[in-house]
Length: 415
Length: 74
Image (cartoon, rainbow over all chains, first blue to last red; front, side):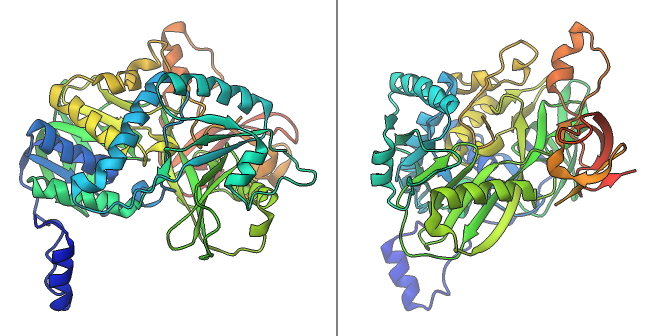
């Protein structure tokens, strides 16, 4: 792999940009691999990269029915933060933030990580109690997180309107300065290119139809291009985790729900951090000037990547109430990603009752930020056949053993 | 607005309803409790769900819906 540099840019500029090599190969799948990863999104590709880099396992195939980063990696609203509630989640995401800061250098690919801070507007007493509890736990873990006054929030985000009667007045705000955003496609492409350079095969447009097992042990995957044998099969998919796991005889504690996002027409710079009103609306401004807007998950389970109108109404009414300056802004696009939610809104990174079958699913509304730390921990789990301490709490059997990890900090949490 | 076919009130706006999701109203034995509470078939396609007509007749309904198209089925 030739690195990208200012010299490469100058050389290729002189030759009319016709000499750039392909960022990754497009091989035909072989008949057998050590590890087959289903899903070439951020999680699948990061897992492949860390398997090759940290564990020396390079006989790896990443399969996707669409294209690299074409699922929820390309559909999310790119917020990266660590302001969670549970100790296990906080530690996991704090490590993630550290990895995000170093990602561009490690992958040799600019993922445009921008540490710009996140402001949460607290509009209910219940949420205020929740963030007070989170503040204590976050401080214990060394994650910067402060409760600030509405006036301080207004100073950080001048377009915020606190005047006049509001349906939900702003009681307080929280400031999480180490949160940020990144370029979602670049994350998928950067991991794909780096994994490919280490010998990982990435095959796009090849759907996995089912998982074949040989009694208690996984044997491989049945794909649109025939059977591929594997010693270990790892699912890093969203929305179809339940359907795929069922072919191996497993039922999962996940429900597929649409999570919507909106992008406005490009505007002049007006917002230099992420603003979130928990459960109502959140927004940030992209480098192109578009406002990237999200809300909570829909209330009706569905695989349709379009979303419910009731959610649009909830998001837009909150947006216009808090930021009346945006009242006449036109939206360019609206879409939904089909997310897999567990009842406790924590993910599943776990072994399964089938030997050699591993799960990295159920990331709900928080999968994008978890790409580096999730990929590293999942690679660790696959290589060692034992969960790393960072993800031990995200086990599949936590519901049956009475240890669910209820979270309050996800975009899909409503209270 | 999407319409939900309430068998008692006829087609009504989705905002009147709460989707309670997959589940059954049958009693569950303690051994199967975690499974009944948390595990989902989560099928892509037609499935039976519980709905609650909260702002209408307030009855619990058993409706069939296709989760791949959001259409209600008879």
